[in-house]
Image (cartoon, rainbow, N blue to C red; front, side, top):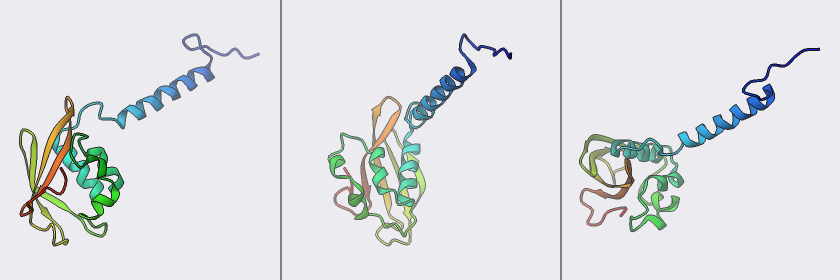
Length: 143
């Protein structure tokens, strides 16, 4: 008869199950903004989702206090960005609660325009987009 060694008073199978649960919880927490999101990180994440055509994911980068938050679904963003284009934000300057850069794209509605992201903390250290304004537009494209 083979004797099974117990770890922390648990059988090996129970120990493996417990470790699996802990690993799943850690993966779930890693997907959260647990460690904060800087202004630069948030703008980079937003632009990454735009370029991947993940317009339904853009809402996660927006501050819920923004006036257009409730209506900023995937269709909202398709009015501003094309899935066939690549948008690059260059010369990004980070302020106390904003980020401004120059957009480059073959999409003429964006190319070489200055774009400002006004930001607000949702929770301490977690920045989200409160508004986006393009140079030359009288109103923000998102606010």
